[in-house]
Amino acid sequence: MTVEPFLDPFEVQRIVFTALGEDLGDPPRDVTSEATIPASQVDTADLVARADGVVAGLAVAAEVFAATSGGTSSFEPRVADGARVRRGDVLAVITGPTRSLLTAERTALNLLCRMSGVATHTRKWADILAGTKATVLDTRKTTPGLRALEKYAVRAGGGTNKRMGLYDVAMIKDNHKLAAGSITAAYRLVRSSFPDVPVQVEVTTLAEAREAVEAGADFLLCDNMTPSALAEVVAAVGDRAELEATGNLTLETVEAYAATGVDYLSVGGLTHSSPILDIAMDLRTRP
Image (tube, rainbow, N blue to C red; front, side, top):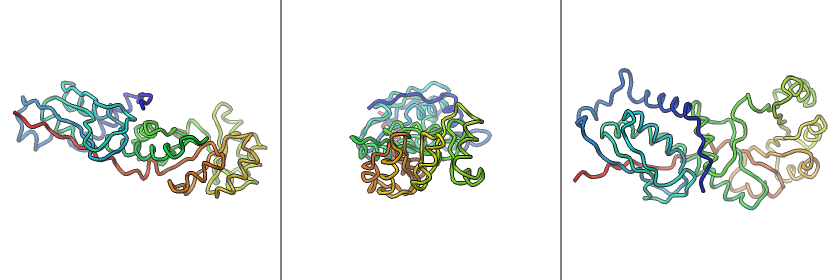
């Protein structure tokens, strides 16, 4: 599959600049590469998958190599983000000053492996949900500073982004309900203050789901419900609101939740618990 490639270039540059700064210090330097490799030396390297998975973040890796080489390196992707790859597949070929390749290596791989790991994990959920009504969503449980990249990786893996932050969707959770006095009061306050912002209400019982819909909510987050309880909510209000299930979902239980007729399954683990996809950079042997 090929995914919509948009990533904010300014956000990518910010992340790359910060990540390289962690590695290079102040003043920036790679003492090993500077000591062992002539500044004029040029080489080619391959980015190679060390495990089966789904790729995401090739453009981000390319930005790292461009940054360390002053834009003089070339980066040739051999696959597209969202592609399934096998162990041993070459993902990209980079040619440039050898020092800059080695200086970029760890930062580029840190970001690429992380994003590809999220995409690989997401694809497992998306594959199970294929043919059902349900779509897998991410959450705000992201690595600080990497939200844009991790949510992009979810899209690359076949998932869907929920909200990017506290600014684009109002989410009325338990503490908001307690502070406002009730679901109805909280919903009315949010709607009156931000009439154009989408509003979702977290519910934990059928009674709360009914109250939220009667208040006007058309998007409910059903938290920590069993499949049978969720099926009751779907039957009662599913024709009046979109429904999202969350809480303790696993790859082993996902089919039971999807079978209830719910619209979405949100999984914090896509971004907070995905293992990396092992990818390496192999410098080609010089003749």
